[in-house]
Length: 108
Ligand SMILES: N=c1c2ncn([C@@H]3O[C@H](COP(=O)(O)OP(=O)(O)OP(=O)(O)O)[C@@H](O)[C@H]3O)c2ncn1[C@@H]1O[C@H](COP(=O)(O)O)[C@@H](O)[C@H]1O
View: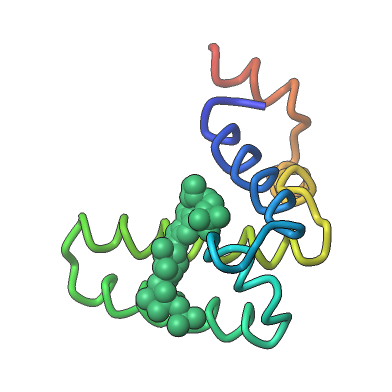
């Protein structure tokens, strides 16, 4: 796991913990308790906001909206107990190299 993966993995763990937390003190807990349709709706809204930011071309807004989208993607993964590493593995498979080979390639 590299530096970039760490924050997504850590956030995923927090999202898992929020499954048993109070919705009164946690947005994530309230979203999880509202259920799958609400999670999917939020993901769609955040994706639309990324599209608008992407069209606008303001770098900071793209970064902000993309962070919102990634967070809501992690909530969806968390809902189904799919760790981010599973997605990384799929990306590595498409990339055609193993994690070890990837690390070695980056150090060259
Ligand atoms: N990364 C995030 C994060 N990104 C976005 N959001 C929330 O996502 C929401 C999106 O904004 P919107 O205005 O679209 O939604 P809303 O109006 O609040 O909600 P709806 O009425 O649409 O349901 C905001 O409430 C943001 O605060 C996040 N909430 C939490 N986190 C992380 O999750 C951790 C746990 O947070 P809790 O949710 O407080 O447990 C935090 O420490 C953060 O690291």
